[in-house]
Every structure is written in C-alpha cells, then in structure tokens.
Amino acid sequence: MKLSEVKVALNKLETIGFQLPNGELVASHFHVTEVGKITKHFIDCGGTVRNEEVANFQLWNADDYDHRLHPEKLLNIIELSEKVLNIEDLEIEVEYQADTIGKFGLDFDGINFLLTTKQTDCLAKDQCGIPEEKPKLQFSEIATGNSCAPGSGCC
Image (cartoon, rainbow, N blue to C red; front, side, top):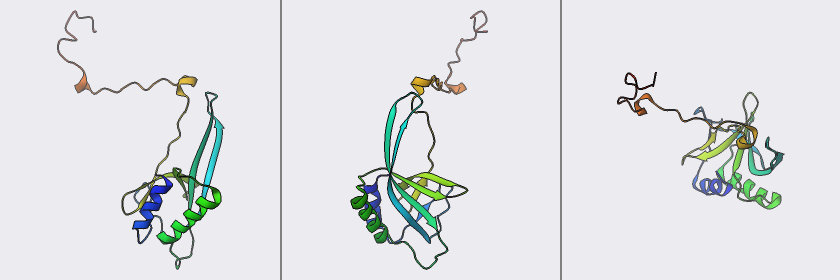
C-alpha cells in the first residue's frame, strides 16, 4: 500500500485500527511513534547493487489508555513527514513489536489497516544456481489412456 492510499483511507475513517495477520487487532491505545523514510543500499548474492526506499510507520503500545490516535492526527504526522523528510509516494512498511520487531506490509479492507506478512527472497536466482521450482501436477491432470500398457516401456 502506498502512502497516498493511506491518506485517502484516513480521510474516510473516524477511528484507526490495525489488524495483525492472525486476525487480532493491535490494542486501540497504540501510538505511531515514527513515520520515516528507510533507504536500503545493498548488493544481492548475484553482485547487483540495489537501492530500495520505503515509508515506515512504527506502531507502539503504551500504557497510555487516555490518548487514542485519531485519523486526522496521523494524517498531519504523515503530511509533516512528507515535507520535512521529502518522502514521496512510497510503499509502506510497518514495524510492530512482537517477540522481536516485526516488519509488515500494509493493506486496507475498508475498515482496518491490515498488517501483511513479508517474506525474504533471493533476488538473483538466475545468478546463484537456484533451480526453478518444478510445477506440481495432480494425478487427475496426468493423461491416463494406454500410457502404461504392457510393452509400452513405461515401467
């Protein structure tokens, strides 16, 4: 989800909710403690130099039950960060504390923002010898006919 899409969604909401991948909601007294731009400059295992940028939200649960983050307040924080940090319309990554800091993608279902799982991946499979995954076939997809008739050489 891009920053512009979050801003559109916030303009339509009266309250903000974030839902974890397991369906649980982040506690309603969460705070967005950071909005930022993260730049990653790296070399993949195939030797290609890469640059990635994402907008980052950090969610934090405090023991402050009296102050809820309202959509207009988060919208103001986002707009300030766009000006001060020169954040463009980037994809959003969300940090949230579980057993360790988790990184999530972001989606929206019309009611809640959904924290989506992210996976690691090799960016240079063609360079480092990772074989392509072979397609998995169902037995029902294999032609049956006389393909294994006696004397056909299939056995």
